[in-house]
Length: 360
Image (cartoon, rainbow, N blue to C red):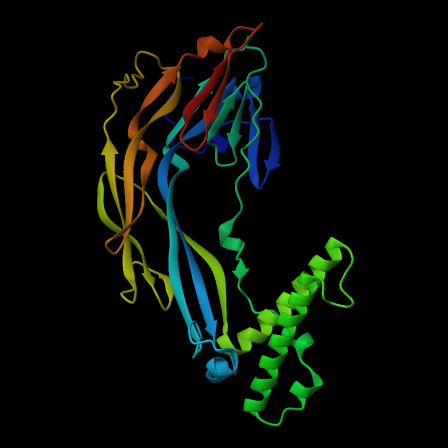
């Protein structure tokens, strides 16, 4: 058996004893090299796709019912919302490299029968993680796509601030006047507590903090009846692009102030595009030579690329990413795993197929 490309799926070619473990929705599988499978473990190397994430906000403005009385009763002339409105803002664009299995880059690790219990950890997609070493997947960050956050939502505390006079007011103008009076009373009560002039002021600091917070919430809710309210809902969308070479003005998606993220062909939005340029490496790695070392273990030495993203004419991202397709294939000799007393352990980056650490 040789370290040759295998164009058939490894699970149909060999029998393995497998143990699965999951960490934060990631799954890795322990593949043991046994006599039943001729001491061979098949694995796949990844290729790179670019994961482009757009973080954006949905802004909802709601006019207060007493907006036209804001100046008359509260003296507010600025930042008063006069009509309901919904619009979107593009907050951030991020680009990271992501490894996906390259079905044309599947190989077999051939261990000798005398090796000390050889095994390898693979992802559930067959990407190489380790050889002769235990593996714990890295814990991913929070999922922004399924974790929307609402900020600036108007509080319902205004209801507890409504007085009997307010509820009995016979006209819209009178209701606005009573609400304004209640705002001034709340401000006066807060000032009395802070200056120590309140007759029934809280005695301990924690109780005072709670009372002041409650008064502030009530005041804010009543003021919003005049100024209006603003809510912000955080959202995100993700796209993937597979680099096959340098890219120039590759439109990934479009963004509309009134619709948010839309498809690359939807002309209702302005284009968000990327430029990608392969970076030349100062190193000169030796290319894979299968004929000279047919049993070697193949791994990736990724290249690098400079990426920038633009929203119209505004640059919203720039940075470097690793791209497997811009690199080379390298090899390790299987003889380094044959020492029964101290077999070599190798840890890989599954996303790129590159070596992270060799432990002897």
